[in-house]
Image (cartoon, rainbow, N blue to C red; front, side, top):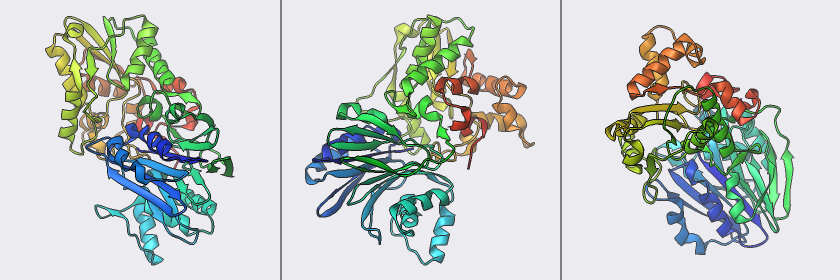
Length: 467
């Protein structure tokens, strides 16, 4: 997915930029970058972070950076930030999102005899395409609006200029941006959890398509929010950090509500409730509290050296990392009936390995309660699961096997309690060797978040979305 952080200060901002960007490391695992502007121009650094954390790659470089304004990015796509020279002036740019019509925009640019210099593995950088669209207009505001109107998908961005920082949320608000304030400085972030330890207070959540201009003294609105929003609901389920808020709604609170909703709909009798670390923990605490059942940790996550489980590009390495990170606690497993809350089930392969370990250690029963419905439709907007095909989603794979080559009524499988939905879930349960498997109902997830459904993107569960 990726995350953005920017700061404008009356004093040196490099330390705040470094730590603020680092607080987004849970959102991406491929590349990190920072750019700072001073009287001599924009200076940047980009590193691959697939094999080591952001901090270890950038900490030794900080002494050579100086400036009062800067932007940073954690990216799962192209190397960023880019530094662009144009008739608008020299500016730095960082983006998150996904441009689905990238090839079309590139072809149109070639027809106008435009060239691209920044490629990754032979592919055109989506950030450079966004910069190209900006530079085709007469002002930064007009250029950002041109990006929002031209792309299909999503693109939130920060622009670092000599006068200040532009913060632009994507047109339908699928990714968040929030402004923070403290004496002598302003910041903008994808994750509000970056603010407290740096002394910032949340000041404003940008609306969908809203553009703000930020200096050390404050910020002002340059483009008003668009009329509709489709923020990714999966932010609260999985992607977001527990301490963060989106639209003023805290992630951990929503996960507790999700777990409570699962508990209210459940009739199973178990000895312990547990969460698949880390994002399943908040859901499990909500479930255990609602049911009055002890919360325990039969799996303990080992974090000092192991990166995120989906970091390696090869699936077999992802599965190895996931298996090595979770250490079983035999005394809490043996002869017990265990219920696990999980954020979601994507492929199911890692979960299947974990469940087998539980049985190997003597678990009597293993029940799983995902905090969201079955993933049926691949994400088209935020680069979630882009390395996987549609058929890598376990729900979609089961549907294909149940339906054969006949036409698929995917909406029937997405509808909780339908004959097709129950058949799909039971087959997933059987393959994972679970005692029971019950998914969260979409209406309960929406209620747990607390926004109207029309303000949420729920495409990966029910196929609905705005373009």
